[in-house]
Length: 263
Ligand code: MF3
Ligand code: CO
Image (cartoon, rainbow, N blue to C red; front, side, top):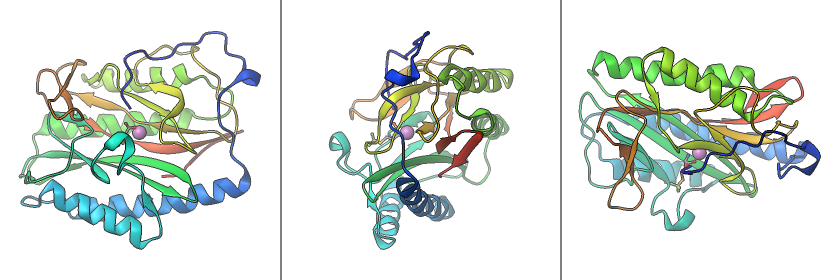
């Protein structure tokens, strides 16, 4: 999600929240959608090899989701033209699939969403193709590690800023940058809803998470800069210095005593 004004609400009243709270039946549906998306990304990642086009990967994702009874969440979203975002190397998010061929040494982020029983899930993995530069491998590892560390923190009662600070610290300790203005988000009956979940921020700030709400946590990082550039296609966002980027995302259900990774 792209937002230029990350939210920082200091004295947040959970009883006045705009958080969506999910019922046990909705959580069952989210688990089913999450399973479709997890298997879809696994299959698309397996087919992300040198020579395949990004458009072919999109077709594989769409067919996979529909065959399992889901609906591609990104297709048509604000007129987005595909079911998958494929962002290669310096491209960090919202890359539109097309004729581009994946090459040996690429880092390829595969970002996808599923609607099942009218509920949204959203997830992303970055795939390393063949012989990748060691720094790029390190970037991918640090980014995935920051997502895992943030997910371990999640439980009802923490603040969004606790997640942001954890991601930022983990990524910067490895010598890399979180892209400015690109955030995670609440989701559920829509793809993007309250709250923003920034990848930069301060512990102890932001909205308090209630139990049974859903957030997408998605660190988006680069080797060289936190600055982004919008490409002319109106969708693709790249690192301003064209340095390689990475992106991992989970849809996470907040529970009283922890979290469930929905996908
Ligand atoms: N995970 C991406 C995000 O939250 C999904 C983008 S869907 C698109 O921004 F349709 F906007 F591309
Ligand atoms: Co997202």
